[in-house]
Image 1: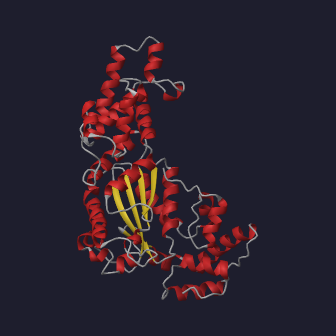
Image 2 (image 1 turned 90 degrees about the vertical axis):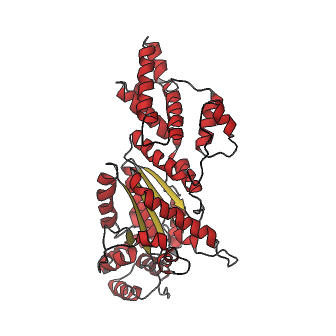
Image 3 (image 1 turned 30 degrees about the vertical axis):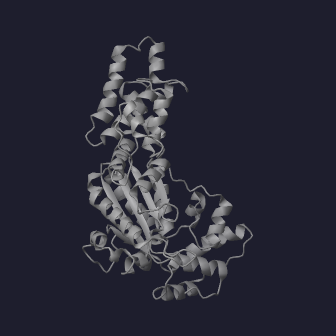
Length: 411
């Protein structure tokens, strides 16, 4: 589960660099102007559409410093507060050309055992028992046996519930469903797995290359491995199981997408042409498959150059660009658009008052830490607003730099 758990001092250090704080408390204290957008998207998607079985992909774009990461972190906070599972991935840390790696990182951050424990609790409730009343270290079958109710009827009821949730569920991948059924049954106390079998199943589900096909066959499982060809289907199944566990859904943020066209310290482009096109194709396939998924919202965040660079950016891969384009072009910011343009949003939403409040909040935090910072006055805010139209940096970043550094040229 994604957590904005940097310390306050680490968050302040990031603010001094003009970056999103990565700390939930500081994010709430400093963010200004995004609330109308994030609250709107929260109402439209997180509160209604996604929990009802919907799925959506949105691309968040803007100049450097336009607030993309702050926007994503605010959405993550709102989703977590609504009991969603949340995942935050940076393209600086995870390669995007092979969706297998993306899926396994999503699975790792979600916490598979916690999801399955939620499924077990839902089954316990469905059988008329309270999971909170089961003592720690004991299973449902342990409690039933102590009451003299651990008979064949109770075992049959558990088995039927597992079949209904997993192995008879047409929306789940067969092997994934069998694994979930076995592991959830083990958490319920019936049927109980041997330690080696339990560890082997968890290892397979997490893509451990050390698991051999013969080992999976030995416990009656399909030897099909997690690969870039099976990962999207497994992700579809994971989203279903997350919902079965009692949660409304999953929010996945993939930030720093501009890494696909960025250069390493030696000046070489980080992604080869082949890997970059594989990443674009992987996103294209996800877009094509998204309507077959349920209970998931994806946010891809990227600098504006990703959309404008015709030789390396998204426009260089027409199969993806054609799917991303907004069919209706509006002169005003469109809250429903698949491409969330934070530059256009900022032009319409960041008036002098919002810029002054943004600066004041940052200055107050820094001053309390003994760091000199001067909030903007209305004249400076108006001047900055006019300059930002022709600049290469977003308004939030410009406000941050002027507050922290004063009268320097920030483009």
